[in-house]
Length: 265
Length: 339
Ligand code: SF4
Ligand code: SF4
Ligand code: SF4
Ligand code: SF4
Image 1 (cartoon, rainbow over the protein chains, first blue to last red):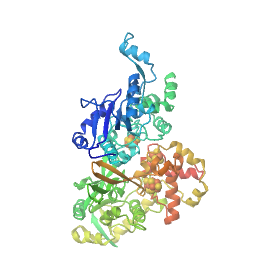
Image 2 (image 1 turned 45 degrees about the vertical axis):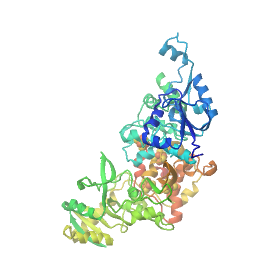
Image 3 (image 1 turned 30 degrees about the horizontal axis):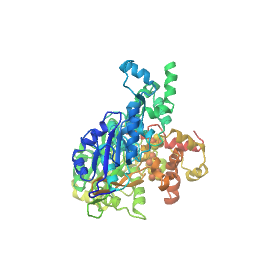
Image 4 (image 1 turned 60 degrees about the horizontal axis):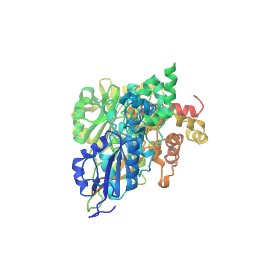
């Protein structure tokens, strides 16, 4: 990575999403000031004016999902400009909340939300940017954790690859010695399937993990679902608790069929 | 070894006195029936009779995550003493815990001495406390249900008093500094102690058949039981995290800030997917079944081959903390075709 006068050029972009991850970056106030001395943020519509929308970028961060044709165009442009592309947040990595209801057709959604006369929508099924173009790095979280973002940026600026822990939330939950929501409260806790990094925030406050950070590599959905059911929790409740942030990823794993089967009974 | 007695009413004075020897750490009740080892100021919080804390004492020697080396601009990496916990008095160690401590000593202090472990270990005072087993304890089967060394003091509760065993120079120091708390043990104390031992022997309900276990495991290497367990296990790693003898760790370099780098050491477990992942992307235990199997084989086969004893002390923590109810005793019954 070049340094000195030749500071790396950085762009930060939001597709369709809540801008929460970009807000997290802005929340890194003090660190951001220091980082500004080491990199040139040349394209960040949310935070500055006079952006350069065409230059080559050493690092680009992309937040949100592809939910319109326009998003896809933007994404491809960013990819073409960037040396290192980083997916920011669960939406960009996995689809997250916007992809929760992909099973409903766009026509139905458009009719229900806007009525049929609306012309300007070019909405498509919401999918994560990682589905369309290759990314060098991904940083899940809803929103991202500031300390993880800073570690990624500092590693990239130092010319090394960031090595974030890939263990499940249970690791951090055990470190904090929380009362386990599954064992002691018979709740649907997604901690064993979800990638840690949040410090087991929810279980530490007595709330089951809802999987906002997306899955660990090779989560054992079947075993989790069977475990919840074995603790007397209904399939519908399991589905309800699991159909949030990471629903697009784990709903594909058979739970969907079980739910249909149960609601027919 | 010296055997004394202490009146039950003097326990809090004793705990106050222990504070002079380091940070007093004891089990406290986090929520009903859930205990954790914590540094305490108010000694009435101590619940030494609690059978198991979520995390065992190993956290008093190696923090789950600590900075080994820290490098600031223009300097060489240096030990920032992040894992330096100072002198600690661990009150409420049970026999299984003390056996586990010996196993950790074997791992960390024999061939290559781990300086991070040693620094805390040298300043750890162990004050044991006699327990009564519940349905998850199987230390009796593991030959770890009694202990006669590797502690400084040990309190066994008797009717209205404690039998106090002193077993180290540091233990002697504690007694010498607090003569007024102790009296010589009487024959009646010893008699009652022996009766309690017998009662305790009978209180065990769980047992693990360890006859020829390493050989049985050798024979069962390709048994379908491991595939089945692999289907059931969440690979959440809880069993390893809470195990007093699981000692694996990971080391990674981090750049938390400009011009600063940290070498960070964290507890790790063979249940995790990236544990056996090596450069080039090869994973020696890519399947879940292989990972679960490894935990049992390491404890009951590989460790026995290397150190002549298993590295499970029968504390029951993994049984208590597995969300999906995988139970080490049942696993081995199953392996033997008994369940
Ligand atoms: S509460 Fe959830 S995250 Fe914590 S140990 Fe239990 S299953 Fe894992
Ligand atoms: S394997 Fe289980 S019972 Fe054995 S020492 Fe570890 S936590 Fe305790
Ligand atoms: S290899 Fe697995 S079972 Fe053995 S000490 Fe490490 S984490 Fe524990
Ligand atoms: S606690 Fe249970 S589910 Fe979690 S890794 Fe251990 S055996 Fe598997």
